[in-house]
Length: 107
Image (tube, rainbow, N blue to C red; front, side, top):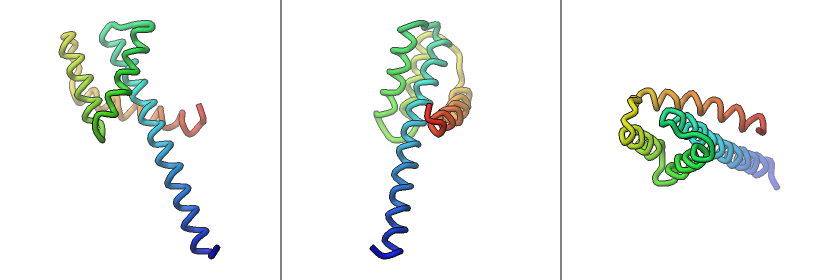
């Protein structure tokens, strides 16, 4: 194997690892976001955990964060809980940083 091939293989492995960590961080962020939203909606206990799983599942509808944002916005509106889209996006950013740190730490 040439030096170039070894380098290319190394870059490919790093890319795969980075993508896996990104996926895990986004899923963790969505779980944390679901727990945050559940608290705002007055959902507690096992129901809050189940709701957080629904938020994680919502992210698989389409690429990007629009599907999660749409779910939370609709759920807040259905319960007459006032949370702006900007507030949701800010919480998403905040929790992504927390989730990424947890994934890197191996939690």
